[in-house]
Image 1 (cartoon, one colour):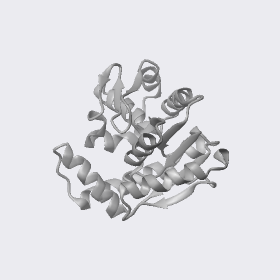
Image 2: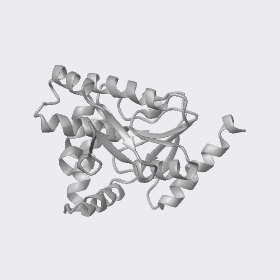
Image 3: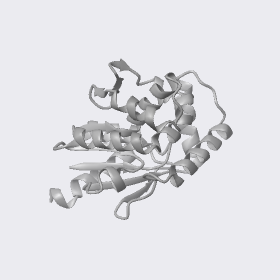
Image 4: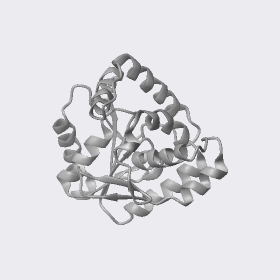
Amino acid sequence: MIIAIDGPAGSGKSSTAKAVAAKLGITFLDTGAMYRAITLKAMRQNIPYTDDSALGRLVDGTVIAFEGSPPDVRVLMDGEDVSTLIRSDEVTKNVSDYCAIDVVREALVAQQRKIAAGLPVVCEGRDIGTVVFPGAEVKIFMSASVEERAKRRQKDFEAMGVTKSIQELMGDIEVRDEKDSTRSNSPLTKASDAIEMDTTGMTLDDQVSFIVEKYYSSSTLK
């Protein structure tokens, strides 16, 4: 059983997916964290997103793993805990460029499918229901207003000691949406059989309850 949660930046995918996995007692696969980890490593090594050859070697030589149980899941890159580092403003601004590269996406999608093989999984991203797991039994497309998403991002950054205005964050999100929706490889799009959920004004508990209900009412469990 796979629950695929897609949606734009700041729509609440990660928090919700973790909480759903914890509620159901199943595996949480944070695909976005994998792309962020590659972005972090590439930036550390001063590899531009335009250098396909170098990125291909970097991805092939990188081990990404997850430790812990949701909602307390840690992201390890080559054994280093990068859970906080991959959420930095710099990585957030650059991840769309790196994750659009074919050699990066192909390698990470293969890893994601390997991790999920034979397991009940909750995973989130931007192409989970359309590309990574098109046969997922439950597909959710999360959305929220740009202002709501900016407010959530602001809270995330404040927790890291970073101050950014709502206006600045709204601008960042709009740029990210444009990049994610127009990239040639696996653009952000709603799967034809996905259930849309506008999370504007919804609490985390509301979001989790909605998805858990869809999980239990899916045809495969009847």
